[in-house]
Image (cartoon, rainbow, N blue to C red; front, side, top):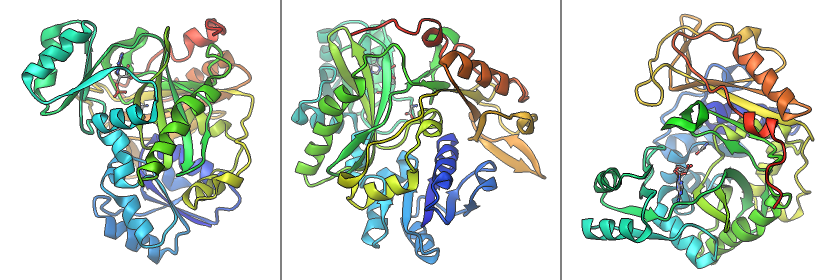
Amino acid sequence: MKVLLIGSGGREHALAQALNRDPIVEELHVAPGNPGIAQIATLHQIDLDNNQLVVALAKELAIDLVVIGPEKPLVNGLADALRKAGIATFGPSAIAATLEGSKDFAKQVMHDAGVPTARSFTCTTKAEMESALDTFGAPYVVKHDGLAAGKGVVVTNDRQIALDHAYLSPRVVIEEFLDGPEVSLFGISDGTTVLAMQPAQDFKRALDGDLGPNTGGMGAYSPLPWAPADIVEQTLTQVLKPTIAEMKARDTPFVGLLYAGLALTSRGMRVIEFNARFGDPETQVLLPRLKTPLATLLYQAATGALKDAPPLEWSTTAAVTIVLAAEGYPINPRLGDPITGTSSVDGAYLHHAGTALKDGVLHSAGGRVLSVTAIGESLTAARLAAYEAISKITLRGAHYRHDIALAASAAPKVREN
Ligand code: AMP
Ligand code: GLY
């Protein structure tokens, strides 16, 4: 099988590795990729905003399966263009990707499907915004309706800050605050059948102790020893299956990865957000433990054949991912500095994200520069190995969190129900 993967982040590096591990893959092509992915795939530099260029590339290479990593090309209709050209594609249509692209649309689908989520109002006028904030009270949660690359959500006790954020967007979703730990749980769907992956936890704030600004994600770990034993089954029955069924009933089937961002509240599970793609860095922590051959699985999803797929198989190990971020990330990342020590990382996966080669030397080229993922018999062992690996890498001013998976490995069972 010839596979074309779209994207250039740490998520795509982990996807590329997992696709390559599947013996069915004869050729792996990636557009645009990064210097890490270049070591294991053939890269193609094309304009991803131009769907027809991607279709032409897939045809020219006689690609059997396209896997789309990031949300932007999905929302831009790349999956629609590829399917129209008869190319099997893992990734939802533009309409189905609106589950990520519009918070309001996601709320409507959840409402119609009976999926538990925070109560909310969609507001377009200042009066509606003020009234919604006062209905729920502090802490206030204000979300811009469209794609915002992680910058659209503000959670604050300050009513004025909440209002100021709301005024920045013509359409906002204001919702009740959800307490409780957050979990990311992904479903792989062919539009009808959905298979749940294992849960992971992502660390969204920039600094230790969940301080500092929100980021794309600073680290992750899996499995979650503290989570309810039936969390996968619960998410499947309460969230993934009803959402996939609702999208199918609307004649806009969701083919691809449905990312459920969950809050495990004292009143039960609630969806905080949907994404229409693999999470980053959750993918880096999940795929090294997935034993099921990935290309075969994603091809089954892309061709409506998941009904006959065997259950997903996982190794019983634990995994921890730590993201190395550039100085100033996420506010104003400093780029263009040399990175050293990557060749000393052994016994751990190294996933490139914001890296570039300048005169043959690896340089930082993005806010999240790279990540390391270590596997161990326990979370404690995996996190020690991950911190050992990241300590080998030097980049001026770079920072990473020191508490990834710390609480979970120190207190392995804090939640029984
Ligand atoms: P989102 O982009 O919807 O995932 O929101 C970004 C982050 O804001 C989430 O990961 C949560 O930490 C926080 N957040 C979003 N919605 C809520 C909510 N209703 N209650 C509490 N925190 C929230
Ligand atoms: N790690 C959060 C995301 O991928 O959206």
